[in-house]
Structures are given as C-alpha cells and as structure tokens.
Image 1 (cartoon, rainbow, N blue to C red):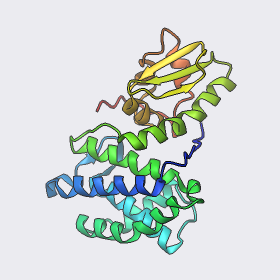
Image 2: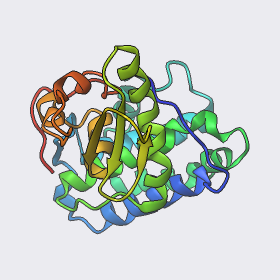
Image 3: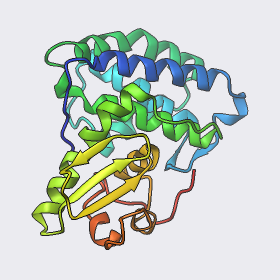
Image 4: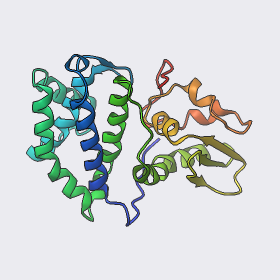
Length: 234
C-alpha cells in the first residue's frame, strides 16, 4: 500500500517537522545518558542513539545531495553506521544546524514532494518515546493532516481487493471514507498511526473494532512497510 499526501493549505509541513524535531531534542536531552544504548522495540535493529543518528543523517544527506537510494534500507543504515561514534549532543547539534534547509523546502509550494519526511520524523518520535517510556498522544495539528494522508491508500487498496466499503472514525473525531460505507473501523489515532507504519502485528490490527467485520481481511491492506511479526504494546 502506497502513501498519498493530502496537503491542506492551512498546514505548514516545515513547521510540523520542526515541532517534532524540537520535541525529540527535548526528550533525548532530558533522558539519562545510559538510556541512549537502550533498544527501540519498534525498530529492533536500532537503539535510541541509532534512531537519532538516522534522523540527523537525513538532513545531512539532504544538505550534501547524497540522495541516491533515498529512504532505502542501505541509505538509512549508512547514516547510522557513519555516526556510530558520534555523541548524542553532537548528533542533535548537527540536526539542528542542517534541518532548516529541509524545513524551508517542506514549507514551500513544492514541499509536498518531501512530505514523507514529516511522517518519518513523527514515526521515530513515537519510537523514541516508546523506548524511553514516555509515550504521548499524536500532536493534534499533525494528526489532522496525517490521518487522511495515511488512510487514503489503504481505503483504495481495500476497495480494489473487493472488500466491503470502509469508513474510518478515530476516537478523536477524524473521519475518512464514505458516510454510507458497509463497515466502520473505530480506532484511536495513535493506534492507527502506529499500525500503518508497521508498528503493530496483523493480529493486533485484526483486533481493532471493525464493527463485526473480518478485520484480518482488511489488515492485510493497511501496512505501508509490512506488519510486525510480534505484537508491540505501547
């Protein structure tokens, strides 16, 4: 399932990215140094330091034009590897220095083409919060933009597979899909966000409130990067 990015004129994607960056910086800097080596359950091959190295590496690669293989596993792995011995404070300082270039582009009329970066930084913010035991709700402005962006491809994929028409209603009041759909999924924003980005298993998604419909049939179309094999509870 592919992501599509709706971009309401009232949403500044650069500001959304910057807000998440500042929250991550505050989160990490207020954590004890021995937490930086803690594994991130949502990204099991990385620890807290590795996630920050990846985020810093994205803006570094953007500045230097190192975009061959952008967003692929080798591209992100190289970011983590080259900053293996860089301190957290240096990573955050470098991120702060380079990020305004990306944020400025995201705020421009052409910025929608890089909107995946906004999803990515919020995904890893949630990963870090989970690893550090400081899970928080999705910021409202981000969520109001992200919910349609994250579900449009899912709704289309499920429809193309011949499944009953689907409407999604979050606990926070977001509504996606047709009002007269056959099936209504009721779920919290956070759970939906984490599921779409592969932080939940098929069993967890199938257990969402699908109004009595076969959740497992729909779940197969939800994940952008594939589901987790094991449940992740946050």
